[in-house]
Length: 100
Image 1 (cartoon, rainbow, N blue to C red):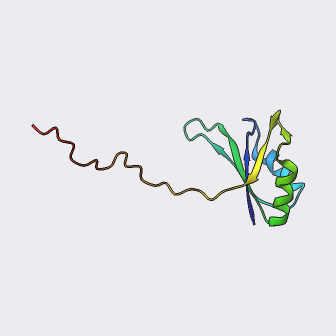
Image 2: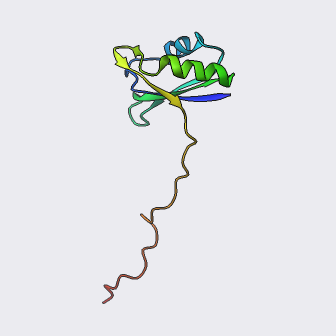
Image 3: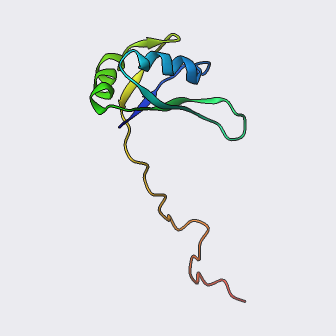
């Protein structure tokens, strides 16, 4: 299994179009284009999961820097999602004085 990040997508690119592009290199398990939660519009990037890691490597090598919908694609292996750590915002900030 190979999880691939695809960036700089044209905002009109659909999941079917992206699937067809990657299927030239092997079996595609899943395609998801990230959308804005409020507007539903594409955020310009997505992920493709390919069954075979070797096929995924071939797709990355062939498609990184290629053109789709007038945009130059940024294609590479997806990094694991970072844990959303606490930055302290919105949490107890301790006693800052100000008592009256």
